[in-house]
Every structure is written in C-alpha cells, then in structure tokens.
Image 1: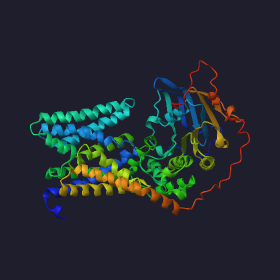
Image 2: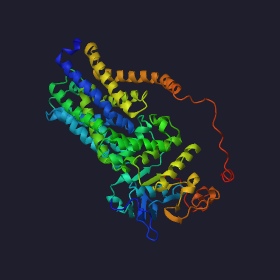
Image 3: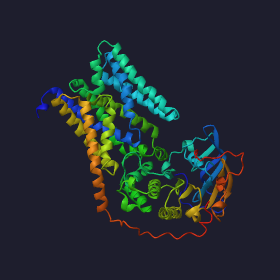
Image 4: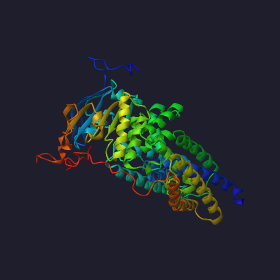
Length: 266
Length: 297
C-alpha cells in the first residue's frame, strides 16, 4: 500500500482519484464511440454515468477496466496507469448481463466464489475467503438459497448474484454496468440497500444507469454522455419525470439528419 | 470376469477408464463455455497427426497429440483475433485436418484403410503396451489441470469478461483448456475413435446436468457416468463383437435419456420438500408511485 486507505478526504486538497480517464477515445468497428471523454471518480464518491442507448456509457466503463482498448487518451486506476494496474482485488465489476448462469449448472455459492479469485488467484481459498463469500451472499439477501442453482432464479436475483460476486473480493471500487436493468421492484430495493451499506462503508462506486430510479438518493454526481461526449458533469439532473433526464431524448429522434441509434453497440 | 484375462482386454480396460475420466473432466468446461463441439473439431485436426505418424513411421498417438495441440492453439488464436469470420476459419481447419489425414495415410506404406478405421472409430484389440503408457501419461496431465485448476477454469468458462477483471491470466487459461482438450482427444482416440471423441466429452456432462444443481456435482457425476459407459461399452464389445466406440456413445446417450426422464419427477419432489411456497397470490400490489404513470411514453 502506498497510500493510506482510510484517511478521510482533507478539506482543500482532494484525495487522488480512484478512476481517472483523460480524453479517452475509442472506436467500435469504424465508428467512434468515445470522442475525448474525461471521467474522474474520487475516493468515496458515487458517480452515475447516464446517457441514451449508444451514447457510449457502457464503452466508457468497459474501457476503464481494460475490456475495450482506448485508441487515445489515458486511464489510471488508483493512480496507476491501466496497463500496469495489477491489484484487481480492489475492483469489483458487475458486467451487463441478464443471467449469471453458464452452460453447466452452478450454485449461487459457486458463482459468487469465483469473485474471490482476485484475492486467492491460484491458491485454494481459506477460511477468510469462505467467510467473505458467505457475507457477500448474505448482503444481497440470498443466504438461504446459496446452495440453489442459479438457473432457478428470477432476473432480479441473477443481478443480485452478479453483485454478490463483485462484492466477494471486498473491493474498494465497485463498477456496475446497468445493475438495475430488468430487475423487479423487490430486488431493486435490496440492491439499493446493499449499495447504501457499501457506500456507507466507504466504497467508491461508478455505475452506468439508464435512469436514476431508486438509486437516486445515493448518487453524488452524474456524468451524462451523448454521442461519445460528456455533456454534463455535476449534480444529478433534477428528476421531475423520466423525460427531464438529459440523454433520455433518444425516444424522440428530433433531427432528421441524426442517424438513428440502435443501441446495439453499447 | 473372464474378460479380464486376455492381456489386450486388460490394456483396453485401463485405456477405457482413463478415457471415461478425462473426456468429461475437460468436456464440462467446453460445455460451460458453450463450445460443446470444439472436441469434434480437434478430432478432425488430429487426423492429420495420425497420418503424419504413419508417413514418418512415428508413434501415431504422439503425432496426433502434437498436431491436435497445435490445431487447438490456432483455434484459440482465431477466437481472439478473428471474431468476425472465426467460424469460417475453424471450418477450414477442421476439414483441412480431416482431408490431410486421409491423404497422408494413403501416401504412407504402413497405413491402410483398416488402420484408418481403427483411429476413426476406435479399436480395442489394437491398443498396444506403448499406447497404454502414452495414454496414462496424457491422462495424468488432463486430470491435474481439470481438477487442480477447477476454480480458475470455472470462473473463466462461466464469465470470461468478469474473469479478466479479477486479474486471472485468462488467455493462458483459455489456451490451457484448448491444449488439454486436444490431449484428451488423443487419449480417447484409441478407444472411442476420433469421430466419436466429442460425444464422450459432451454427453456424460449433458446427462449429469439433468439432475445436478451444482458444478461440483455435475463434474463428479459426469466422470462417474463417463467411466461407467466406457467400461460397459468395452466389455460389451468384447462379448458381442460390436465396435466399442459406437457402443460407448450409444450407452452414454441412453444414460442421458434415462436421467432426463428421471429429472422431472425428481425436481418436482425437491420443490415440494423445499419451503412450501403458496400457489396462490399473496404478494401485495406495490402502491403506484405518484408521477410514474403520467411520464410513461
């Protein structure tokens, strides 16, 4: 550890950013998806990345963790350039998925345990590792179903499993790509509670959202993307209704010259 | 137990057990990654290795291993770099491997069509002392990888993108799966034959997952099933003079059908024994949130 992990943010001097993307550009195929995105997340912050389908928000988080290579610009995690960043146990990632299952049956416990591999790597898990896995499953309210197959779960429960898997490593930074997509109301509440506890414990969160929804009270700052550019970086947009959200305008393609975004690329 | 006395049967049974363990052990990861037919592709490529073995008068099992490993590495590289036309490239590799094998065997002096058939469909009487040693060494490698790295291979096969963010060496593990699958193909080649190898990697796993809920149980059950059908098939082919590979695969499919038929009533009973969930609606209707209706598009 080179930096004190528990030091409170000093007034005046901001702590080093946990995520720092500088003029990030990325292309999918020939199409530019990010056109110079600046994204900074400080320790303890909860930042929502908002935008319409195809605005580049998914690509932005996926380039933060190295899943999409940047064609220009830089990314640093915990002050280390992404290329040299190795301490993945500090990062919990929830990919955009509708299911946690693979081609073979697996229990909730088995799937969540795989999230602990960022700490255990090639050694077998010890007592502390097993306890962390159990804790992560309990956090999302699935303790009584830990030995059940993930195939038997609802969409919202799948999402809870994916989040428990990210929490199993006890990360300092949570990166979540649309964690509320296709999640029933009951699971949304549980997810919001889980997240609130994590934030209260000091976890930094970057999450992609299509709309603020039940997580709104947690969010410190919103970054709104549109066509691969940052159009807003500041307090979360006032949510009068869903239409008040910048970036929600994809519902009404107003300019005929603007190509219709299908959302297939994010 | 008369079938235990001839030495060729002893060798065949040892080979059968090793195949029964290793094929489902690596096959489960392929099924998990939804690449169930990868073993089939490697089997095709291994043909060229067998052909090379005959042509160069080298041990066909070792040559098949070398070529199958090289082919599986190329397949994995295609998966990384050539996502768009990957299926076409794989098709070239499969059929090229098959055609190359037939061609090379025909060119060689020692290879004959009968020889070729024994590699394509398996033949117990031709499993030599040397083959058994080779198979045992290769099987030890497969078991070491599939059991020793089960947590890591599970994570990579379950969700590759997530596994990369845990910092696991995903590319190396993917290569290891491919190489291990290639080695398993050559282990199984003498018993079930190159054309039916993939069945033994996939069918026991498919059968086991009909009644299992966890990865661990699926793994154990598919290895037990694999060993049972390879042993039963080998013994059957000794008494009935039927081809061992075909017998083994048909037995595996029979096991799949039986377990599938068994699975439905079993699941029903399990559901009943679990905390009784009322069949009628008891959930409260969530109160409509103000402002949520009028904004809907």
